[in-house]
Amino acid sequence: MDRMGRKLWLSIAFVCLTIILVGCGTGGSSSGSSLDVDADGKKKLIVGTDATYPPMEYMDEKGNIVGIDIDIVNAIAEAAGFEVEYKNYGWEPLFPALDNGEVDFAVSSITITKERKQSFDFTEPYFIANQLILVPEDSDVELFDDLADKRVSVQINTTGHHVVADLLGKTSSKIVAAETMPLAISEMINGNADASVGDNAVILDYQKNNPDVDLKTVEDDSFEKEYYGLMVKKGNKEVLDLLNEGIKKIKENGKLKEITGFDME
Ligand code: ARG
Image 1 (spheres, protein in one colour):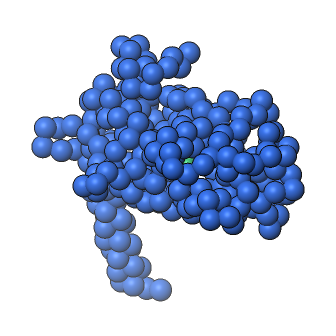
Image 2 (cartoon, helix red, strand yellow):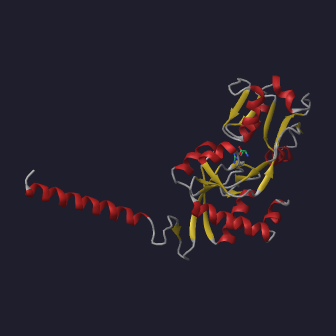
Image 3 (cartoon, rainbow, N blue to C red):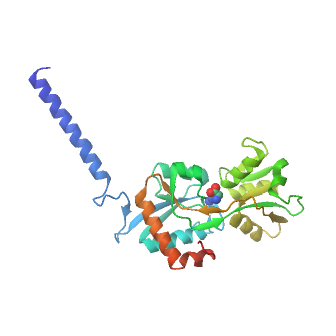
């Protein structure tokens, strides 16, 4: 290459580099934060959820996303000084939405588990739960182990699904894995399953709101305590710190207990 040619290549390379650097610079705001800021200068976080899970997160008649989890997140946002906007993704699509940055965090009665911690980060726990079995009133099921030869419906890829898979085998055709918990319960009521297994608050809420359906719940000591956390993309320390700050505050000022009715510690 002659001198002119080399010079030309150098200038092209320089222009390209400048474009790349400028492009990067406009990506983040000057504070080093990637979060949007609203008119009052407050950070605004997009929150993803699966709003099919009453009383935790569901749609009211007007189509608003409401529930105990939503009250908790609103309290956290107020305590830590940020705004929130909820988006309903459904359960399974919620995880990739977090991964690809469409949402800043997820609230969905998500149990903090070792497996999930490998791919996502969790806040401090804000709610305690456990699995509960729901069966027709005349069922002979008394213990979890009684489900070993039964068809069991669950919401797919939930901790309920995991415990049932441990008992029946991961690929068992006796597991009816529905997209939502209400659908899982319908499968049982329609006779496609002998029992449903899911988070206690949701099972109890269903039973309470459907007194015409003859159902009973069965507890089992083998079900471990589960702790719900808010979930962020792995490594998103900015959002994680903000959420933990809010959780700490609403634990200290009694607001969390006011919403859930129980002490976390
Ligand atoms: N706690 C269970 C889990 O983490 C079930 C959560 C399901 N939440 C929902 N909104 N559908 O696997």
